[in-house]
Structure formats: structure tokens, C-alpha cells
Length: 289
Image 1 (cartoon, rainbow, N blue to C red):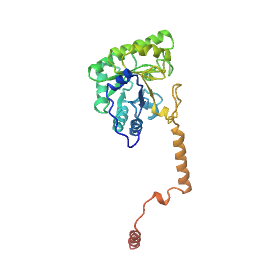
Image 2: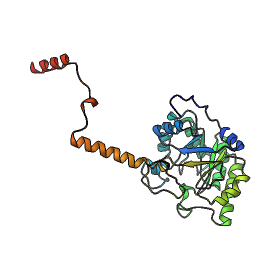
Image 3: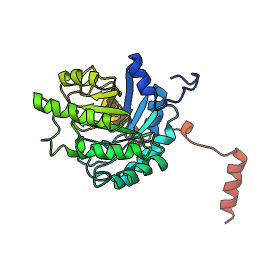
Image 4: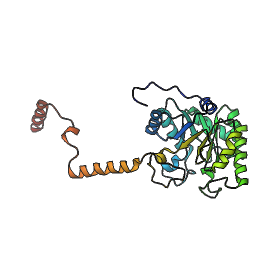
């Protein structure tokens, strides 16, 4: 979006459903701070997810599990300040909603009240379905997440595609249907075969956002650092690099370091000067001490 473009109309909760009904793809991207939110805003995306993938991409953890509620809230608040039009989804971190409906509601309320989230996202089916229903009944819109669920990747056998047998695929579909029945507004489907997605999407009335789930979803989401080539970690099979900013950033810092060491930076144009008479007066004052 250019600097002279008209401000976009803010996306409402009904926006993704309207896009699904019209057959218009929904664009979701993650963001973790104010600058990345501003980039997502300027690029015209529909939905921004402050994913717990921040644990790995910006906080340096080796999985999503260690990230805390307070860490996620800090990042989500920063993203909120950088957004005007897109819907904002906050990822509830591992351990912040599983214990009970009351715990889930208390956590989600913080993401809505303190960080300005439009929706919260929780992972898995099973008992998470009960948490989703409780959140919806408490007036908090929810995004469900099935397939590969990173918070419980160890229990799933690691970061690998799910639903690759007929029975496993049926379990993914059942979880998705249960989350819709619980009142979820949207669903993220991660790392499942395209055949599973093709069978699932016609069964759902809510928008389905895919990540490594084929082309039959209502929209797609990718991690900001993956699609821009900023993250040093390995990328999943479904990631497409649309830029290689890490290499450009390293080259920029290397050029800066070389100029500092050679004395080429800073040059005269990078500094400030005093009027001649003031410089002369300063010399006089110093000489008189």
C-alpha cells in the first residue's frame, strides 16, 4: 500500500467469513513486534497472528513450549500498536489454558483486555474443544488449530505431517468439526496432506486457514521470518521464501563494521556542527579555565 493510498477499512470478525462465502482467499501472516506489524499493515493482509512461534523466531527458545503469557502479551501489545485494519489473533501459549475453563477464560481475557486481540488461538481437539466452547460462551472469539500442533509436537512424534493414514486423517477431521461445533470462528490446519484438506473444507462452515495443508483452504498463513528469509533455523517443506532479508541484513552490518574500522564512517555529512563564532567562543572559554 503506497503512502498516498486511502486508509483501509478495518477488518471485522465477519470479514473472513464474508471472504470465504465470496471465494476470496484470506491472507494471514504472523508478526511479533511493532515494525513487523507495520509491514503487515502496509502490505494489506487480512489477519495478523502473534504466534507462539515467537518463542523460536524472536526469543531464541528451541521450541514454542517455554514462552510465557507475559512474553506473549508484551509482543502482542507491540503488534497491536502497529495495526489498524487487520484482525489481530493472539496465540495462547502452552500451559496457559489447558488446566480448566476458568484458567482458559482468565488467560484469554488478558489477551483481549491488555493486548487488544480480536480473537485468541488455541491448539488441538480433545479437551481443548471444551476450552474453546467456554471461551466462546464467555464472549471471546476463538481460532482453533488442528493437524500438527507445535505445543504438543513431542506427543505427535515431532514436527511432522499429521493425518497421513485414513484413521489419522479422520481424527483430524473430527477435531476440526468438534471445534466448529464449539463455536470457533476460524480454524488453522497445519501440515496435513492435501487430500485431507480437500475432504475437510467442504464439511466446515467456518473459514479454514492452511499452513502446509494444500491449496483447498480458504486462506493461508506463513511465519513472517520464514517468508522473508529472516530466521536462521531450518524451514518446513511448506515454506516459500519471498525474500532473503537475513543475507541482506548481514551484508549491511558487515559494510558498516568495515567503514567504522577504516574510518570511512562517520563522514562530515553524518554529524552536526556549531556556528563558527560559537566554536571560537568555546575555545576562548576553555582557554580561560
